[in-house]
Amino acid sequence: MVLIENRKPSPDERRTAILDIAREAFLQDGYSGTSMSRIAVLVGGSKATLYSYFPSKKDLFVAVVDRETTRLYDEIFHIEPVRGEAEAVIAGVVKRCLEGLLSDTIVAGYRLIIAEAGRFPEIGKTAYELAVRRGLERIAQYFQKAREAGVLRDCDPRAAADSFLDLAAGNLHTQRLWNAVEKLDAAALEAEARRITAVFLAAYGNDELSRNARQRA
Image: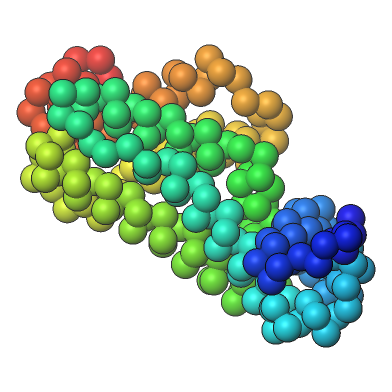
């Protein structure tokens, strides 16, 4: 893929194109197998131009992880908790979270980071901060609003976020990471989303939601 067209791309357009190309290169060849020289060739410019945007391969990799995880969290947490439809709203958050975690891109990213973290600990630590820790912060912020709206009981939003992520990154996600499940099954996704919603609301929902969830769990 070559960037240069009849119209010279703007700096933002070029940066976006670099991230798009780097994302595919990292997913295909891994962190250690991807070179800045190769990315420069794919972008269609010089290494000097590439380095003017990203001073190192680590900086480029971090920027890719940053963009992809930000997109995921924005998609998951774009709905405000509404008391009248609280269970449906939480169930929607659960389903979107599962869909994100089970998507081809996120699964491939998880596998890549796990494979490279042993040789490049700084990559694993940085990816954890951007993906997991920041995700927990976004979840906790959402649960803080849900608590204030009366959807959740009086709980520690961060503890609720930890429990939520433990549930979401459970059995079905593990099967997907290990390739025990190659494709996302809609029925399995729905069943897992219902299970997680029931278990989470039984523990953290308001009195009514918790009581109803315990009857189904």
